[in-house]
Length: 375
Image 1 (tube, rainbow, N blue to C red):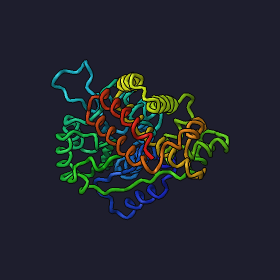
Image 2: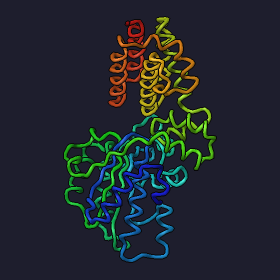
Image 3: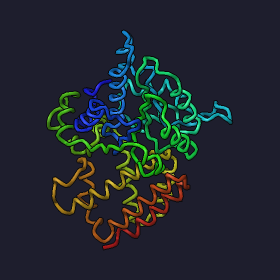
Image 4: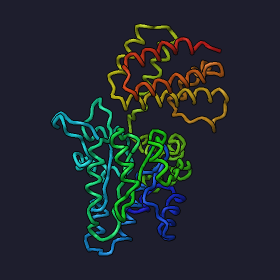
């Protein structure tokens, strides 16, 4: 993979390349930012660049290996689950799902969601984590000599999903890195990482993509009509992944909009029986999908609030969302928007901590019946 395949992010590309040209490449870099903006793409392209530039014994097969992300000195670490077929004492590692990872990253490219990854590995309601077995496996892999005499690159996707044991072992590995090893971490929630790990890596904050970049790339790479590309680019919120999802018919957001509208109507009518059924339906989703719905809930509340200001440039909604907000927005105001925001963030936290989803969503529904009438 090359930097040409990375959407935008020219500033980050230049910074990474400058580190190499000035011989001040740190042994651990953490790329931070929201999902879908190209952090994994940057890490993968930079890893391939290091391997193609730094190897002392280049081979004819090397370009093809890098193109296919099959280079023996390129190691990927990512969250995994425990399958029923695994023994009780087995700690899942990335290699258990190497075929699924390679298939996803080569067919979809390095722009995919956690939900896509969970679907690829057959997860249902499980939350994927990085286990202590993975850190042991990394120690073993990185202790070996480079196959080509140059760098060894370890790309860690979502290190914030490491359990405590794994994080402690990785910390030791970063403190005493094997020779010519570069760690590239791709992180969305750095505050969840150990402070000692954060202090030992060079952090680079990756920004959301400008609307103009997404618009141009949709036209150039996907052949989208310029007018449609502009609308999608605004809705994408700086995420290339979100832009790709908007292109797909019947997106998940359409389902989320229906669920959001249903709850708001039930809350307004004080339909407790209906809200209980709604909460039960939400509880049937996997944890990751529940968190995505709650993030969408936040989005709709923010956009409904902004709709009241009658400033189209500040509104980022689809036509269907705007059609609903036209009558609904007046219920979201200065008197309740902060309380609603706190309520949803609390629900996101509770779901992330494996609280009973039926209770979390029913409580959310009941509290909305009160918040919707506050002025």
